[in-house]
View 1 (cartoon, protein in one colour):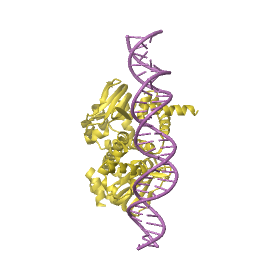
View 2: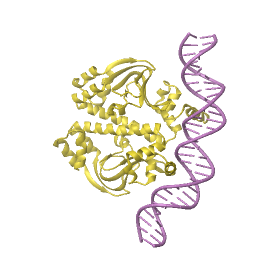
View 3: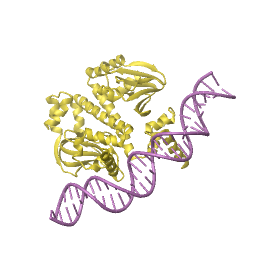
View 4: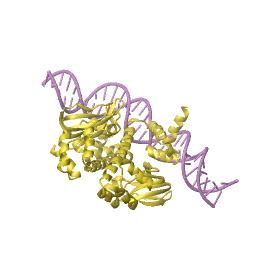
Length: 191
Length: 191
DNA sequence: CTTAATTCTTGAATTAGATTAAGATTTTAA
DNA sequence: TTAAAATCTTAATCTAATTCAAGAATTAAG
């Protein structure tokens, strides 16, 4: 819990008035590999914080899933469209390693804004970071090849390669496992 | 200017204390078709509001440009990566119709946050909308075909089709003008 | 250990879109 | 009104990635 408070405190210096609700509203939960924190068709009414473990936000595309975001230790996770618009989600949030998470429900989260405007600043700053990530990924899709995106992921997020199978990496790159396998072969041969 | 104030006021009820800085910090500017408000390699240190006209944020991909966002009347426009990280941009902001815009520079914008926490709420809410747009476009890229994305754009943003040539629409869809031409032909034949 | 399940690789056939190049159409401007 | 410029279309070829179908390799479980 202290790690979560520290995370928020990094954005804005919080006082007891703001910290206490965090302790009250966020609830610790242990989840197991294979569990779902959100299933397709449900309305997302929680925000999750990963204390330990690995969960992922994944978009359904017919039969398959496309991993939109890996959420590791100290990451927040939420399906924003469903949460904000209150519509059934096209995503799922899947637990990929036995994890310890903290969750806050929507009503409590909105109460934070009532308690203090500081939460607007915290959330604004978190959103800014999130937008930068999204925009950069967007730019990459339009400017660099899949091979380059694979190498970039390997470079920036090597950790994840040790924690999920290759077909999950492929789904995060937006390609089939077969295509990734071929890319890796090409790269191996060039050495 | 009143339209801009109304826009912000829609998110949070502003008082004179918050409104006055808007009048001081945003400066009216007339720009002509073909002008650039931001050029590749520059650092984006302004936020623009389109009062009348059309400007676009476009990403360079080698020789070509890829339109990331059309900004029409009442839209805000900024290259967030360069603005927030203070690094040279890979984008440009191009004026596509003679336009009237209001611009605010970064220092003045950051002053708004000092004047009132309300600005954090306004910006948070604007960011939320912006994230929803981005995430939806992201999801579309991964789940629906280019043809479907074309039809969706036509449906949701018919206006833009009357204001920019087809090759610009193509660049916004992330395809070549030739590819869009073929899609249109296919669709025409099916009727 | 040994088997079963999962994950990864390979190859053939297919497809969407890029590239290149030319020509047709439309718009703009002298 | 006509020539030039800009935009759009068509077609041939090429490429990256998909789909489908086996198999190989690795990992997990009894």
